[in-house]
Image (cartoon, rainbow, N blue to C red):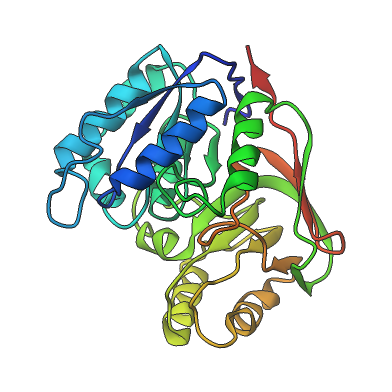
Length: 303
């Protein structure tokens, strides 16, 4: 697996695509303006504002936009507009050979984009970024996203700097320190990938997990499904998000299901859904320190 991403510079081109649900034009414009204010040349996929049922265009249109952006040598990073649902339907429309032959670049997104992170890891070995989306809450609104947009821009433009992602109000469920490459993403999508070539495994990894709008029994079912499938076997640590709208005590479910793994677990991290969204690289070594409420990593930068 590659452990480096290109270092972006002012004037570099980035592409915005919409692999999942329909996109708000207003939020898209606001998020693109933030990227342009950082000096980036932002281009938007041809079908980003399309509508086709639940999706931002047909499967073929969304796959074509992603492929065009990834395979364009002028594009140095690909950023997703939003999540929702639909990325899973793209996988059979993507050509692994074309993606693997293209110059490495980061894909940025979270939630439904989890399946694309896993697909890229399986078929290209590319490092990708689990972070805020261009038309999402953290970038595409006026009041909330200045810090999180800045975190994303700094990660793209100075990836080689060691970063300590620190959440002082995170909860130390199982104390300890762990080191390994980062994997994971949205809990629901990781479960949806079971049985597919992109399912992957948590073996040897620090696992990042998050989700939103799950009743307690659904959250328990997802953990149980992944446990019974052996997906968590060999994991070395767990970093969990804030489980927005996931019942009265989602951390209790997390603890009951995953504490028997015997690995450090930190909950309440600023990852995934919500207005507070750190940018977390997937596929690079990191150190989890539950006592310090932190995840520390360095991403070697390509020229």
